[in-house]
Amino acid sequence: MSYVVFDTNIASLTVKGRMPAALAARLVGTVEIVSFVTVGELAKWSEVRSWGERQLGVLDLWLRQRPVIESSEEVSLTWGRLAAWLQRRGVPYSDNDGWIAACCLHEGLPLVTRNVKDFTDVASEHGLVLITE
Picture: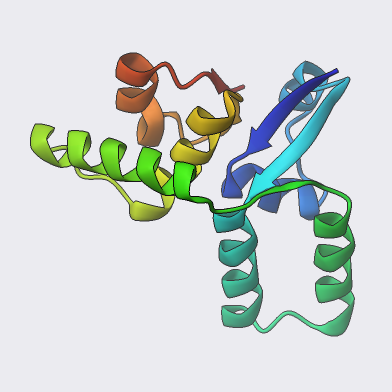
């Protein structure tokens, strides 16, 4: 059985039942994981968008059915090295994307994303494996 990490955009689509069919087909037989960052981003989005009780229940159930990569000293060190490398290169990068990439790199897991451009540098230079449409 193989494991994959969902970027927040993929998690959001999946919670809403809008996973692109071609991508869903590529993920058959995998175990979907999310990072602690995605949990936080989904919580923020639900608050900002004033989700109702039904939507919050769907999100809660969806999250309870997936393992979460938690922050750790090792993930933090990976993020720090990655963030420094990106800064030295002058690459603009979201801290949250950096944390998600650090979780994947530390765990040695591929990232499922539609935001390929956000992770291209990390993929090409640090071996982050991307699964896209």
